[in-house]
Length: 282
Image (cartoon, rainbow, N blue to C red; front, top):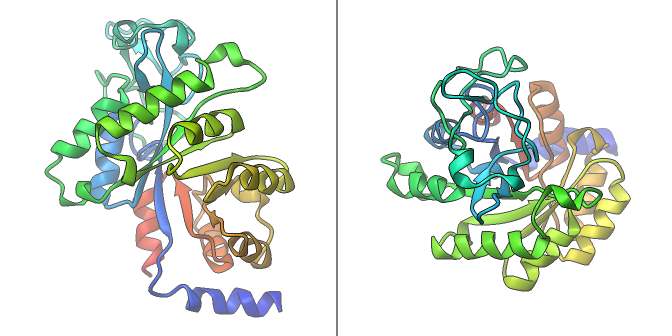
């Protein structure tokens, strides 16, 4: 039965291509979570931009993955290494002094873009609204709220970051084009209290049973497990039968793309979105 499903699912999915999400923009080719990486993903025609949201000390949503600045990838304009400072402790003015355009050795094809600053979410919204790329009018966003419940001092409170984030989304009239994701249930609960209509996704590494339990309690529409946790097509179909969309992360191997598509996932988060888009139409 499992083998039969593996053979039939690609045919069942014809006409309904999976959703392609550009992880941190287009991390495979450009420095992650930067405006050039997002612009490249938009120009490539991806369905969704995946990005990470943190709050500065003076209340601005900035797009950066780690709680602390990474001195290996971030410097000052004059080339000096940036301090390993907590984003929460920095004002936007201080954040804007950093150059985030260094290429990441983990991605050999990544192009360095010296002079590239750490962006705000508002700057990304402005980029989307002013883009001359026709696809920008359709692009959607996966806004990941960064928070570690075991180290709550790393970030602002769930209530504060949720209010700041949701208010910014609504001020830009982007509420129909975003969903909110997090590994942290409290952050998603805070979003739900502010916007009952918000679409949310629960992210998980580790226990799939806990993922389902928490996603159900949160009334999430999407589950995003680490892709290596997904065992087979039957499991994916069981999640979909419960009403969840299934969008695993972060998948860069074409062989694994094939497996996941055959299993029936709804989307894939990848560092190489244009390559995945080409693959899905082969």
